[in-house]
Image 1: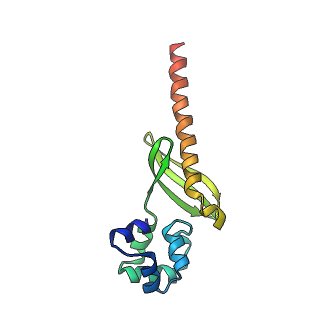
Image 2 (image 1 turned 90 degrees about the vertical axis):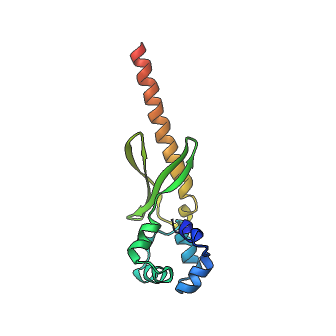
Image 3 (image 1 turned 180 degrees about the vertical axis):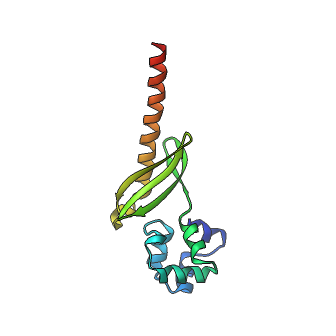
Amino acid sequence: MLKDYLKKRNLSLYHLAKVSAVPYSTVNDLANNRVFAENCKAGVIRRIAAALQISMEELLNICDETTPVETDHGSVNARIFARNKIYYVEFSYDGKTYKKELCSLNRDCAFFVNDFAAWEIDDLISRKELEVVMDELSHHA
């Protein structure tokens, strides 16, 4: 995530916004997954990448990294992304990869997308755990 990348390099969002000539609100939204890099204009990505002295591809990879999502089942590494105006979460559990639709891509949803991701992950893990218990019970009956 961009926020982690900046933190490791002791750079603030304000500094990045100033050096890149990208509005602070855009940099802040990008760093907090309210806006996804792939949905930004190429010029914005180019200016931020130049300010960080990395390639645009490197910046896209940094912004697209998986992030720990805190769930009732502990921390799960998940990738939250947007496609076709919809937020999705992608994560692995028990050796399988799952992709779940979260909500439509809008500013209101962006503030809660991590919570939505945690709920979806918890729901799937709970259902999988219940399936295991039910399967064990049916074999003992």
